[in-house]
Length: 211
Image 1 (cartoon, rainbow, N blue to C red):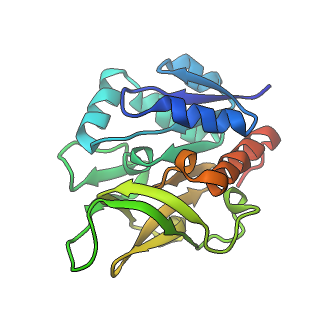
Image 2 (cartoon, helix red, strand yellow):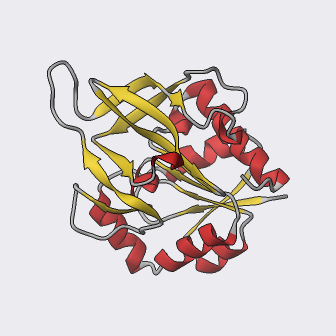
Image 3 (cartoon, rainbow, N blue to C red):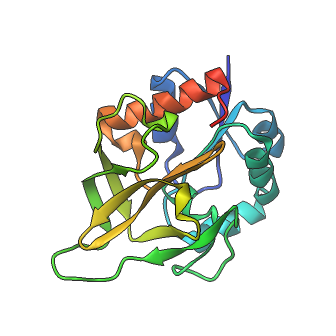
């Protein structure tokens, strides 16, 4: 049985993420152990909250290098919400350096008439890597659930796997590059479409497909 390590760094409700993966048929292990992360078949980096505390907690638990090593190993890796943002170099939300795995920064939505910040609720994805395994068996523009005031802006837009439009702003909603995948929305709160995404990730883990 394949094991997915869900990294615990005190930033989010890990139970809901684990429940979603378990519904998709996975065995999860909530952990902050570098050894567990290294030995797992796949790794999930969830997160809810602010950028600076997240990076401080990761560094206080000596998890920065194990996370980078897991990504470099080629095993499937999925970031969720804040777990997407901290993969980048820096954020307008704070002053801490991010993990820097993906070149780029995290930006704040700018205010404009008719939109709310945070961007909260259901919205449609525009899939840009339409054939990516993470999107299998989804409609062209699936609705998923967002809660965020900041969005990632990668230097190389080819890593974008999906975008979302909020007001006049079209921003990155997901990235995918080789074995690294990360989403701004919450698949565990996104009903059937979210469960399908988690199931697709589990399928990747079980088949060891390099993407």
